[in-house]
Image (cartoon, rainbow, N blue to C red; front, top):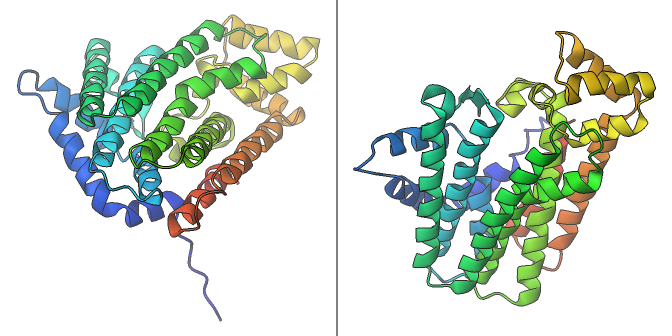
Length: 333
């Protein structure tokens, strides 16, 4: 009898294939997050960075550079830059969301305080810009600076539409394109730019990152309602409790009747939530196929990501990146 071994996850394949460069990236991250003047900075940063994150964004930068035949040493700087930006946004997000768990561990703002999380996040943003400048590539600086601004815009937009039951899917897409997809797209794009790739290849990489980022966030938002704490590294139903207008909620609202909308008005708009409200919210989402429809949207963006890099030369890395969007979506299966 033939035994079929489980296939290695795409991000694990990426990490294995790019291990030599990732060792350099991790070394640079450790070096640049140090601070003799303020020991709390490495304490807070190490707590989050060492919590077992996938390092997916820096891996995308390294993969893009490798596929484009990179000869510059600065792809290491850019991968570290991307991780610093991502970590800074997580520190800030946990303060804004008043989160208590991240990657299965207590958040930095819970272990220390909000002030430390915000200021260390600011420090990491500053470090990221120092790394960008060291590449001597103005276009790279422009891409990552724009991405940083777009991330902030996405977060602010999410705040302004919070608890707003009239939020549309178009507005939701603007939010996640800002707060999540912008960095995915930039991470892929700068890998092509630093390698002096053709413009059509750079554009393809940027499109891939954007679509993957949208797919990734939609899936995360869906997992908040039908995943597990192990999948998320945080509590199930946090988006419901925090009254976030994520895609499953937007979809179920479109199909809810008058009585059901009163439930959403009480729990989301007014914030009057009772112990069994999450279970009832899930029943309504199942009744109106909101979870299934959201899953289909995630699959749409996964296909879009895969098509985006079909013009790149065939390689093992391209194959892995083509498998990655499906893996992201299949976390729901």
